[in-house]
Length: 155
Image (cartoon, rainbow, N blue to C red):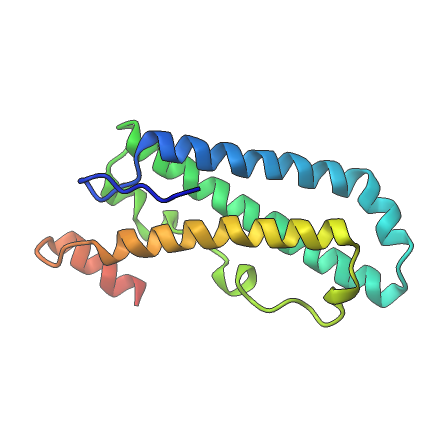
């Protein structure tokens, strides 16, 4: 997924559609795993391993939820359903960075391979969206008082 910022500084619709599609495929794969094979994988672990499994599974779903929500907002911006300023307002920013980008729980290296794959893939998607948001926020001009206020609120 290559980031695409047209002259407006906002991601274009085709890029957002591809990113959204990729994220939704991962949402579906995650749900399928956690509802089926993941149940057996979790049950095979010791109690402490089950706790780590649950915590890291929540991290996967949080990353995906946050990334999909952000992509939906910016897809609406690209389609003219909201302004870029609305899309970058504090309430519509990518949330959960501390959790989503934080270190894995102790013992995560012993998790089942499939969950570790989902952890890696969800982190990649989340990081891409975070980088894109950072680029958008860095591109906000200081000449616009609304943008200046948003930047100060974000600090």
